[in-house]
Amino acid sequence: MVHDLLQEMGWEIVRQESTRDPGKRNRLWYHEDIYRVLEENELHKLKHIDLSFSKYLRIQDLSLAPNLENLILESCTSLCEITSSVDGLNYKLLILNLRHCKSLDSLPTDIRLESVEKVIFSGCSNLKKFPQISWNMKELYLDETAIEKLPSSIENLSRLVILNLKDCSMLERVPSNICKLRSLEHLNLSGCSKLGGLLDNLRNLTASRVLKAVRVAATREAPISIPYLRRLEKLDLTNCFIKELPDNLGQLSSLQSLLLGRNFFESIPSIAALYKLSYLDLSYCERLQVLPELPRNLRNIDAYNCTALGVSSSFSIFFENLNFFYHGARINLSNCLNLDQDAISEFFNGILQLEKRTLKMYGIMRNNNTGCVCFPGSEIPELFVFQRKESFITLEKQEILGDNSLSSLLVCVVVEFRNYHNEGQGLVVVFECLLTREDGTIDMFRGTLRGWNYGNGPDNVDSEHVFLGYDSYSNFSDLYNINHHKYRKMTIRFYVENLTKRLGCCNVKKCGVLCRNDLF
Image (cartoon, rainbow, N blue to C red; front, side):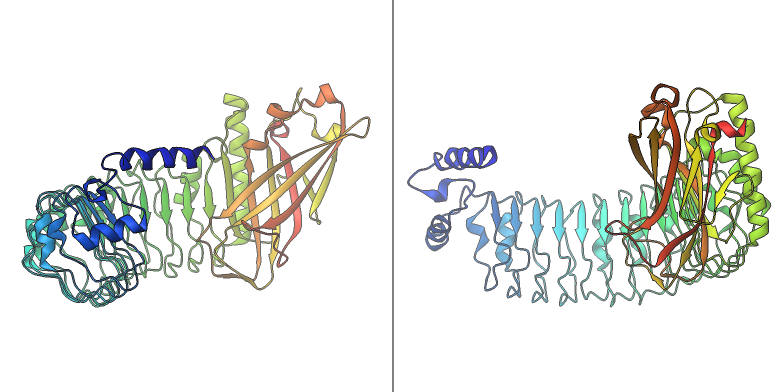
């Protein structure tokens, strides 16, 4: 209601610019005004044109709108050319957007757009050639076009910050002089399946912050120049058939996300010096045998379906440095079927003993972190003193009361997956705690263990897996005081769901609970 009133007030303010001649206004929205202005070629004050989804649009003489700043023509599916009259917008046009104009098959070669900052041809699937240009834009989107090569004049785009070539499946090469783009921060080559690999002289892209090259199949070896991109924050080389990584990968000192999934290397050089790294994806690296020494600030690891991966000393050192139960982390080792279940269970018993020493040194940490580790297995680690072969467990007051109040629970479950197929909706183990007072009143709170997030995780799972972790948002001390309310028992029930529904193909077979107080 308020929004509508404000919009109408805005329309009236613009209408008052010229009540009799809409061609003198800087914006038009009423269809009769637009028709009149276009018919009489009165476009002098117009700054913004948006004719998106106009199926039968044929572009007019835009030189009649010399003050135009934004030209938006998304999904004008009959538009097959841009006339040279766009050249008349040389010094004012800032944004040119022709996204999904699927009939557009060529661009004029004589257009000069000195002022333009963003040019979007995304999804122009019949656009095969990009001309020699003198448009010094900041952002250029050519993703999902049919271009076969970029012009050599691209080196003149000294202001270019973003170059998106994603899913240009006909692109056969990128000119080597692209490395002269010293302002380029985002380069996306993902899905350019005909490329003969990445360029070797990437070290000159000194401003680079994001480099994506998913499914650039001919890469084989990651360019040795990549580690020289010291400002790089995200590197995505997923599914590039890489067999060997550069030894100096650990020099990417600004890196926050490293995605190397679905490749063929057997080992990874040390990345322990990547102190800013928070996410590492090694999923479906089926030849990877051992994890490298890992940085202590790493918070998310996806290493599912690494079927040759074994438990290593570096993994133990990582957990000790991480202080898992204080900082929190999500580690997905699902379908890593080569992991020795006895060894990994013993390993986590050791981690829990480490938590015991940490609590004795620092006391109960009241943070808002969550932690979850998922790995193949059918047994609850023995240090979980309360266990049951069901999807729920009940503890009496004397079993759960340690100090004056409870702190965060550590929980562990064994989940049986039966024909689980990942629909991209994530997966969490939910635990619901029901606290029964002496008078029979029940208080409840809910926590979760995040197995995998929206859009990732293993494609299929058909075996039993262990989920171990905690959710500090379910901290007893912040919600309930055991002595004050005189609870007589606590029941915790577990089940598995994605982001939309409970999953019937995932059954909790065993569960275990450990109150942190019990570690003393």
